[in-house]
Length: 134
Image (cartoon, rainbow, N blue to C red):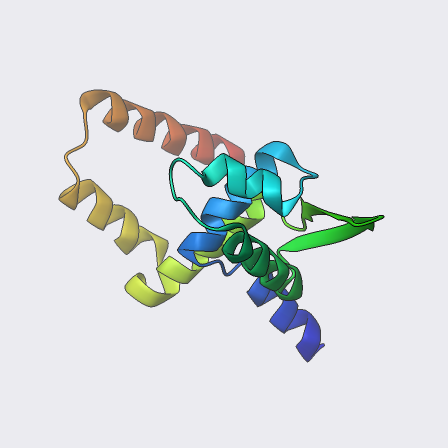
């Protein structure tokens, strides 16, 4: 059971570099490390070895899967974008807001300059959530 808990924690805990790579994988999977490196060449300029090493570590962490076809390794995501976002949000809530959603939302509303459209969208989301809980 401890192994499953560690796997779930690792699978949703990504570094900034892993997020960048994972976004490419989600768009192009299954794909080789060279494909990912080429996709990021203009924006990041990472060497192939850097991308490949990071992707190998992501397999170990449970973020990616690897399938060898002859001498080619194809990588696919092991977690969905929603699961990754959920994990990231939960970590933020724990670290910055002691796990409480309402203080985080209050902070966002008070600290960010929301447009009237964004405020209206929030109202609609709250109405929809209220209907679902009835």
